[in-house]
Image 1 (cartoon, rainbow, N blue to C red):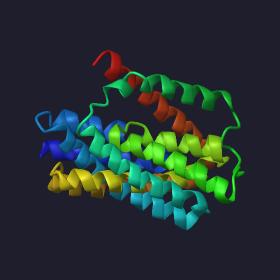
Image 2 (cartoon, rainbow, N blue to C red):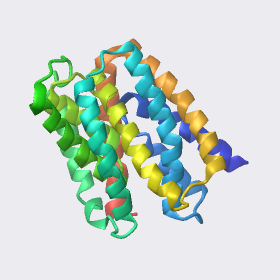
Image 3 (cartoon, rainbow, N blue to C red):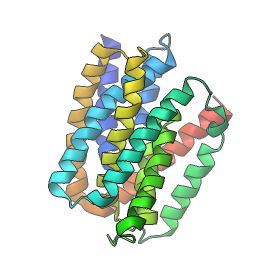
Image 4 (cartoon, rainbow, N blue to C red):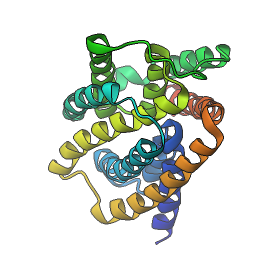
Length: 253
């Protein structure tokens, strides 16, 4: 029972952070591995995906109701992410992702440094692409991040936010809204494989999903109330946490 309470609290906090800038897995996945050390890693990842998809879905709906969501980017990116995330989830059951592990902290460090240095980064929503060019870029970003999410995963939401700001000209709020739609596609695709292969704790997943949704609803309110500046600051905080966590896992843990 104590484990369920801890994991429910972790899911709530993860949902709140994930709704704004992504990175909820930074809290939710370590909590699962710590509370249930004897459960297969794939099962814990599948359970986390099940809980996360409900919170991310709630965030996507919440943003779509209150923010002008760039569907012309979101739909092709989400479609590509869905296809490639399944491929990534299948691949990780056959090929260990160890070669990515040591590169990830440095990639995240570059993302944080760029965002911090560019003080006006993500402050203005001025889309850079239209028509077929927009769709092509969306497919490339969605497909690449989708495969990464299914194969490895840490920081997926944060990477999406950064890429939509940097390469599409969105502000942080708009980028976060589109990222949620793509994230839902990633999670759904990977979850299909984890569920099919039996790597899912359904009862625990339902409890965590409810808490994840509740946290997500609060996260949306915070993002909309405080705007792009708040999202940017939280983004930098989450990415900094990801750098420490992935660096520890790669070189110490």
